[in-house]
Image (cartoon, rainbow, N blue to C red; front, side, top):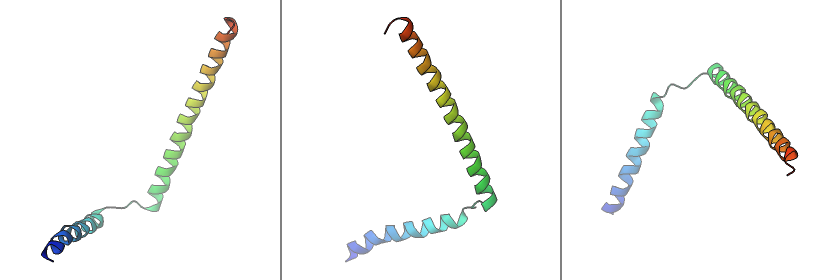
Amino acid sequence: MADLEKKKAPRTSWLRETRGELKKVVWPNRETVAKNTGTVLLCSLVIGACIWIFDFAATSLVKMILAVFGG
């Protein structure tokens, strides 16, 4: 039975310490979350558009090279 108590002690102390650390966290307000989410979405769209344009250009270039050299 003493072994069982030794195994439970680290878990309970870990949970207690975790709860204490989460109380120290400064959570962002709704406006900050909305602003950061908008920034991430905008950057994702811009990067996605750049990849799409590069892919389109590379595909067109390969098709053109294959057409010229009869591939």
